Length: 472
Image 1: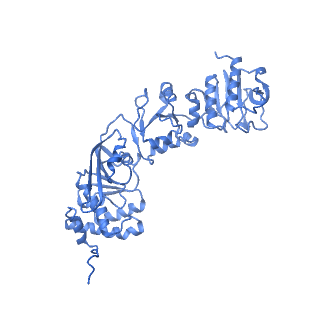
Image 2: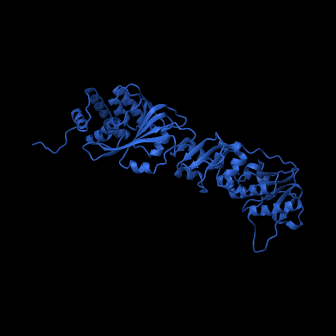
Image 3: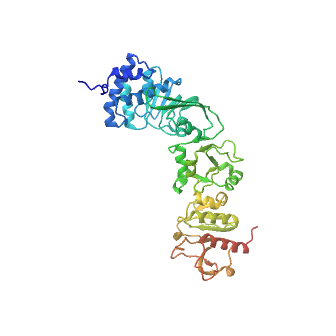
């Protein structure tokens, strides 16, 4: 006797019935294509790991019916881009139901993109193109609508869609039942508006779904929103946290509620970009035409290690020219400090005491690192900078070289030449052996203290210099 509880075997007839029970009547042509696609999908799923679903009814409901129901709830413009198509959902089911639809299947994973190519050939789908890469500013694919099926947070999806979605185009997001809570916490980008949110369920199943539809307004004047850690511009900005990245990009990040306004006031032509946290306001006085980015807080905070929370400025910083020693009106500071804070403090001191220039020796930290800039402030942009040799290969002629050393002439007895080069040693190791100096200068200290902070010692030396050579 047959087991009446045993489910029916997969077949085209069962597939037609599963669709029909959800209010979707398939034509014979549509059914034939769905069955051919399903046969290929099942054959390739195990080797390519296309889906974690394996039961026939579950696949039909959660992949095929789910895709078609979304297309029945919104008018689909053409061309339509399926963002993160994976194994073809929702794009291929929508194309089967709407043969007139011009479709782009965007899928960066090579094995899945190859599967999509195979599926489109098998089903003889016209006007379908596979885009086997991520959307980015360098990958433009103008379309009238983007549809995405639960492939990431709303902010990330809208950011990715911006690279291809024309003004007035729709971003159609297929989400789960908690989409309203996600939207309530979403900082909606200024170039998008929310048209509607619809909650529904796949009929005769426990599967709850939501559809969120946004329209790109094409609004200008507001910041471009970055909500994805994969954004190419964000990757460029992250590189500005290292000396190598700063040198490569020719940019440095300035932050701080005092520093940013000073840079805007005194160095506006050098500002390449403004970055704000979330949708915070742009800084007052920012020149018209400076591009602005609004970066979601968790990504912005990576760019703001000091935790200022305020706007950041990406400022153009050319490579440092090689140093050529020459007599100047004021001291030349030779800086080999490896701590960015000490470098920044020394630059601030140099600007305050009227140094002629600051020479960053090979051992020295970059003056454009965020911690250097926080200590230096705008002085890093006003004090002339140059790139010097390693400390052990210094040649300062015609400038007298004055070295700070505990064994030198005490400051009250020392006479500074007006033109000279002043060198403080490295933090910890001090001065390299065999360094030839014109004179050594000592800062008198109580015997209980072995040495001063390098930047502090430099400050006292500069103060002594200015007592003898007042600022004009």
